[in-house]
Image (cartoon, rainbow, N blue to C red; front, side, top):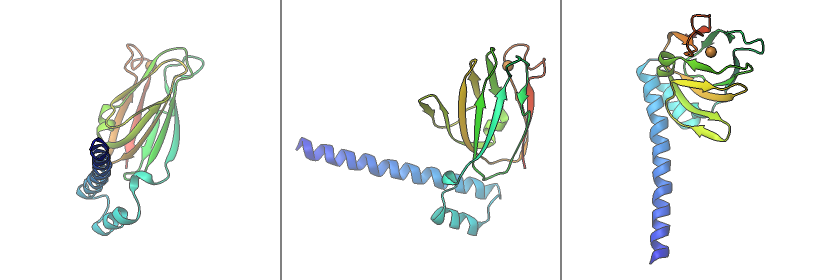
Length: 169
Ligand SMILES: [Cu+2]
C-alpha cells in the first residue's frame, strides 16, 4: 500500500511540474502577444515548435567597477531587443562591493534565472550585490520597450558616476 501511495504521489508531482512549466511558457507567450511583439501566427509557431526560453542566448559581459577601483559600469550603455534571450555575465574585478540596481528594467523583462556559484535563483530579481571578485549570470527575455536607469546603490557610487542606461527597443 505504501509503495502504491509513493508511486501515485511521485507521478502526481511529475505531472504537476509539467503543467506548471507549460503554464509558465504560455504566460510568456500571452504576455508577448498582449504587448504586440509577436503576432498570433508567430505565437502559435513559438508555442509548438520553439520554446523562447530555450533559444540560444546572446552573451554580454558587464564589469562593475574595475581593477583601478574606478566607479563605473563597463559598458554603461546596453541595448536589447524584446523576445530575444540574453545572458548577462556580471563580474566585479574591483576591491569594492557594488550593486547592479535597475528596478524598472527588471520589471520590463522576464527573468528566467540568476546563477551565482552553485545557487540558481528563479523568478523576479531587482538588484544584485557583487562582492569583490564576485560573478553572476542573469538569463532573461526583454519584454517592455523603454529606457531604463542602471546604477550602483552603494552610498556615493551613483554620485561618482556609477550609472548606466539600458534600452529595450
Ligand atoms: Cu558601486
